[in-house]
Amino acid sequence: MRRILVSLVAALLLVTGACSSTTASGPVTINVTIAGGKVSPSDAKYDVSKGSTVTINVTSDSADTVHVHGYEIEKDVVAGTPLVIAFTADQTGSFDVETHVIEATIATLNVR
Ligand SMILES: [Cu+2]
Image (cartoon, rainbow, N blue to C red; front, side, top):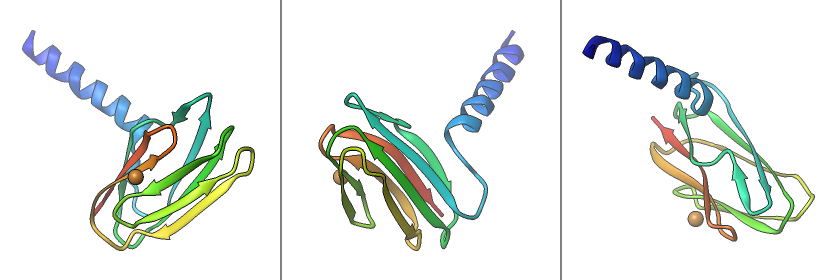
C-alpha cells in the first residue's frame, strides 16, 4: 500500500512539474495574462540556469505593474498593450515576479 502511495505521489509530482516548471537550461519565456483581476500563470515555479535570458510577455486587460524581485525590474503594463520584460538571470536565488495592482504572484524564478 505504501509503495503504491509513493509511486502515486511521484507520478503527481511529474505531472505538476511538467506543467508549471521548466528545468531545461537556456532561455525561459513566460507568457503572462492578466484578466478580470486574475493572473495566469499563478505562482508557477521556473528553474533558470544562471546566465539564461528570461523573457516575460505580459498582456493585461487593466493597468498594472509587474515587478521582478531581486533584479528590481518594475514596469507598467498598459491595458491592451503587450509588454515585454527581458533580462539576463545573472544573480542566483529565488525571485518572485509579482503584479502590484492586483497583488498576485505570477511566478517564482529559481536561478542557480
Ligand atoms: Cu513586488
